[in-house]
Structure formats: C-alpha cells, structure tokens
Picture 1 (cartoon, rainbow, N blue to C red):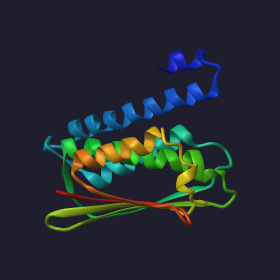
Picture 2: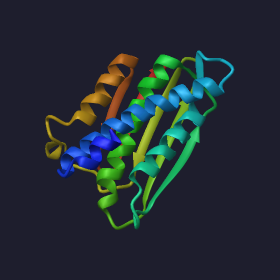
Picture 3: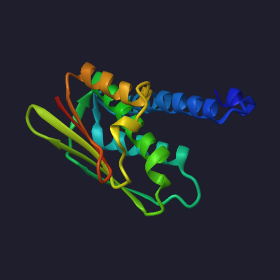
Length: 174
C-alpha cells in the first residue's frame, strides 16, 4: 500500500489508502499482542489500546498539532473476537480526532476510559474539539457506519454526543 500510495497524486485517494492501512494495522497489533501474551484467548485491553493509539499518533502526527491522550482503563482481559472489533472502533474514533478535531488551534485532549464490572464494560472516548452537527456528517460516512457495524457485532449499546467535543460511549458484555 505504501508503494501504491507514493504514486497517487489525489489527496482524497491518499487519505483513503491511509485509512485502510490504519485499519489493517489495528488488527495487526492484536496479532502482535497474541504472541506476547501467555493466554492467546484473552488480550489485555489497556496494553492493546495504548499500542494502537500510539501507532495512530505516529501515523497522523503533524508538526504543530497539539494533542494529548489520557487513559483511565480498568484492568481487564478481553476475548480476541471482541478486541478486534473494539480496535477497529478505537481506530475510527481516534483517526477522526486527528482528521477533524485538530483543526482547532487549542490543545486537543482525548480521554479514553474503560470501566469494567463483572459482566459489562463501558468504553468512553471523548475529545474536547469543536464537535460537529449531525447534518454536516455525510450520509456515506464510512467511519461512522463502521463504528455502528462493529457495535452491532459486539451486541453493544452505542451512543454519540457531538457538542463541546465528541463523545463515543460503547457498553458491551465481557
């Protein structure tokens, strides 16, 4: 993909290929985590999330962008099939922060929180960007469709707030 991307001159196509690369990498990080863990059925959510966001940070980081990530993540091991879906969701949300929220001149704060109980987890990803109006989001927005599809596959409850930043909240069973 990198070789092909170097030949492309259209910025929209370059962005599209980069998005595909990041989706592939979010799944590759899961597989890296599999080899590092003694239990290949369960993945440490905090470690995986930090690796994934760090990868996205380095993929998107431009000089002058002011962005800070804060993690509040309960210790929890998540099944392989769920961590892949959650990784794709995190990839879409964090990628959107880099694409849209960093247009502001202020420092962007991104909070990633996971609260775990015996049976459920609630993942909340919030940024303090300018937010958006739903009618400004394209009906064909692939990122939002992917998030909703991944949540359906997780059998998760999904909510989206988009004023004073954007907050994604996903409640799923362990």
